[in-house]
Image 1 (tube, rainbow, N blue to C red):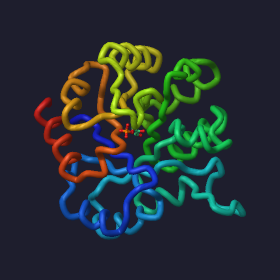
Image 2: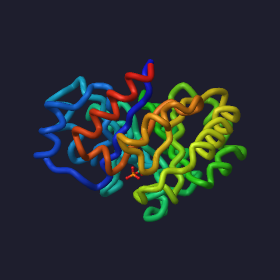
Image 3: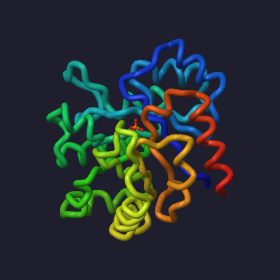
Image 4: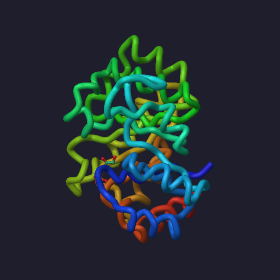
Length: 224
Ligand code: 13P
C-alpha cells in the first residue's frame, strides 16, 4: 500500500472548488471535507475517498441539535473521520480525551477509520485507559502527529522530532499507521515521507490547491 495523503480543508472550500477537485484530483488523495460537501462529492464521484473533520460523541440518531453522528457520516460516503484535531480541542469542550475516545469508538463501530490527531501532548494518549481502547482498534486507527507549533505557520517540525515521536507512537501501539501534519507542502513532502516511521501526511493549506495536492501524490508514488 502507498503512503496516505490526506488533505484537511478545514472551514474552507465551495461547490465551485469541490467541482474542480472531483474532476481532476489524484485518486490516491483522501479529502477531509467540511461535512456540508460530503454527500455531494460522494454522489458525484463515489470512488473518491472522503474523510470528515469530526463527529459527534453521540452515536446513531437523536435529539442533539447541530450534531452529526458517525453513522450519518458513513451513510453519506465517508471512509475516514478526523478526531481530536487541536483546532477543535481549542474551540470545543466536547474534545476532552474521554470524549475523543467516545468518538473513536463510534467511528470504528461504523466501519470507518479514525484519524486520531495528537499534538505535543501525545504522551497523554499512552496513559491508561486510553491505551486499552486504542489497542483494541489499531487496524482502524491512524495516529496523526500535528505539533501546534507547525500548524499553519510554515515551520515544519525537525525531521528528527517527527521521526522520534512517530517511532515512539509506533512502539507504544504495535506498529499503528502514522501521519505527520503541519506546514506540509510539495517542497518538503519528499523528506518527510522518506522517514521510516511516517506512513503519510495530513495536509492543511496546501490541500486546497489542486495542482499542489496532485504533485504531493505524485511525489509520494515515486517513493514506493
Ligand atoms: P497546515 O498544513 O495548513 O499547516 O495544517 C495542518 C493541519 O492542521 C492539517 O490537519
